[in-house]
Length: 586
Image (cartoon, rainbow, N blue to C red; front, side):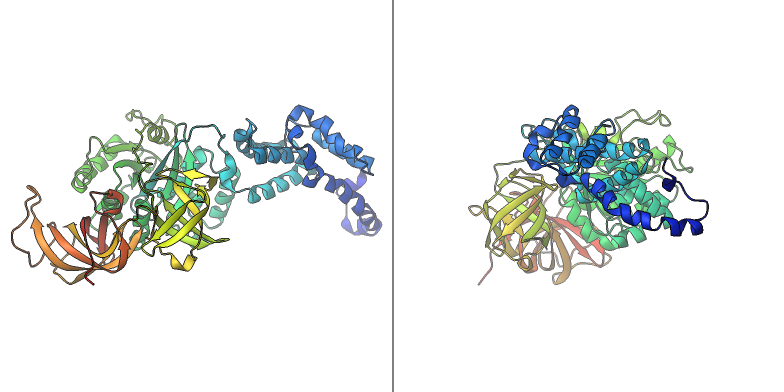
């Protein structure tokens, strides 16, 4: 070993003697270092470069194109030899080439392999090389966006897209379960989680680290509360899931409604911990409100995850599980879920990941499938891909043009298609399509899309606008008749009452201009006379007038755009469905 490589006994005497040497060696060291950089693999022989057993021979090629330093070619050959570790820069470059081509059959697994390499390689090569590699790897990881994990093979059949919204009271563990699922399905690698765990520990919040996979901005992490609807996705054998992680806090219910309106399936997370379930379920708790809003937003199937079963106060006890179940079922039934068909209960623990992917030994009384396998085994949703295009906009921003986000409710969209933005009637063209951050040429119903549009400015779009096909526009207007159920309101509601209307992704102020009739809950009969007011638990048909023009459809024609909630003073007052649109009198 070179004497320079060992630590000297004392730095004082060492410094004067050694100072000129490193300066002299620097250029040489740089020359050796630079060889490993990516540009060194000429692009010309990229396709040939794939098989790993040809590595050693092909690594020598660049030297023969008249490169002046024999030392350099030696370096490459040396580093290319330990292929088992697969950490050499040349190898990385090769792998990237294959990704770019995407025709390679191995292209699908490329991403998964790389994550593992990143974690193993460093440990095996003890020397500085390993460390340098890891730094390189880390830089690599920063650059490569997560979705590139597995580009689907071109001929693979498209998996069904299912949007799952996680709802429930604040601190029930929604984000943590979401983060844990992403980790279990390999969407977040171990290193990233370890980084989160370190950061969370520094803030004395070590149990929060999983939720950071979904709570991305600083404020959410500091307070430990989700504000915006977090998005992520994972795949099982048969389906492709988008996680929508809704905020549980009651101040952010409007955001949660926007999230629920994109979902096909809701997961109601409740905490089994003593006291936490009760607060979430009592009159002001979000467990009730969220379940009701999800039903109104058109979610048909509900999975109730009884979380925190590993808590010392619970310890996977069947009694506590049954107690939560008994309290919830009557309420969910009242909201409109059918306990036999639409609801499925299961115990789990988000922090330890128990019963999310694998069954739990501590819990012999639960015999059903774990959560992820249960999601996979759900029957397919029937969606009409030949219907008219309807894409309610959830969010928009500027990024080399105008980008909008939303879930395609019906129809299909392809690149370069002409669409119309309602209610403004702007004609726009689709420049590019991203389905869950993976670029595609066409998308079917149920997918969460990012579209880059041409022909409209970002300022001209508001959430709640709808993209339609030009030959079949959606209806828009200000006045409509609707059947509403008053859920909770202290006093009576008379004509002239103002509230906030949430319909699909649109939020608009409305006024009840007239009450038309009361509807008997049991028989469905309509009253002959006009009521002067309605109060809690009554069902009525009323005429509503919005402050501005909004897009909507009757519930009969298009349920996703015909159901709404009315909120006031931070509470959900009524839910309803649009019966008919009233044309404007000029």
